[in-house]
Image 1 (cartoon, rainbow, N blue to C red):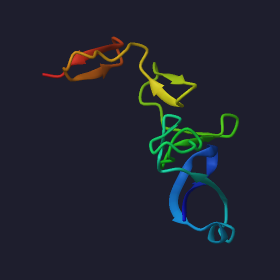
Image 2 (image 1 turned 135 degrees about the vertical axis):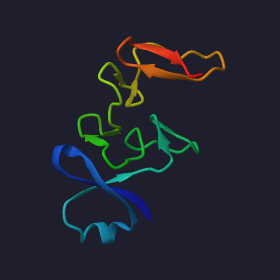
Image 3 (image 1 turned 120 degrees about the vertical axis):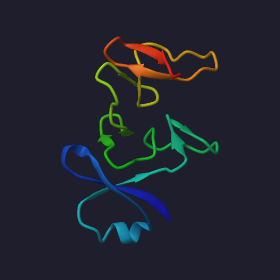
Length: 112
């Protein structure tokens, strides 16, 4: 059994199911295999990564990159071509504190 994503309008993922290929072959629409163990272009169990990220509802399938890309959280964030994940234009502070992104100021603000 494998995971498959149904691709709809605008190449958006509408549904993700677990099924055998022979079942997928009977379904309407475009279905593309996705790997539960693939995150940011890496297979977390050491296998071969598939399509950069496990597909989720609302993700976009980019056929040129052969990748599932999550929705962009903020307009200022930039797509990392290696991971196909959106990243803030400012690196998250690694000081043990918690921060939230401030889109207006494009800064990480401390969560109190």
